[in-house]
Image (cartoon, rainbow, N blue to C red):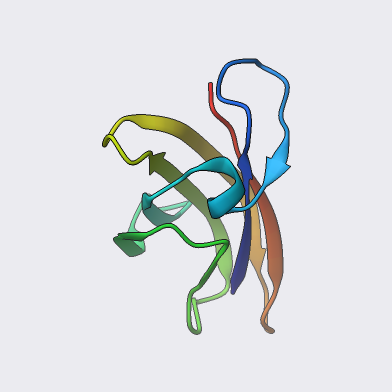
Length: 101
């Protein structure tokens, strides 16, 4: 499963401006992928910011991705939950916008 992340470049407004880690100023991220039916966490990590996440061979199910991002001061400015990520029999790719609420 491939998850493409678009980071909000403008943390001062509610208007989403799609960007990359570099253009948005995101330094690190924490994420977790859980099954929607059982709430079981199947993958998670805290790592330098990335514009995508790959989860190898998740079981067929529906998943939820939670992502937070921090800036160079360690402040959490980005947070999103992407729901309805379905894996059937084959690999899939989803886009997830990470807002700065």
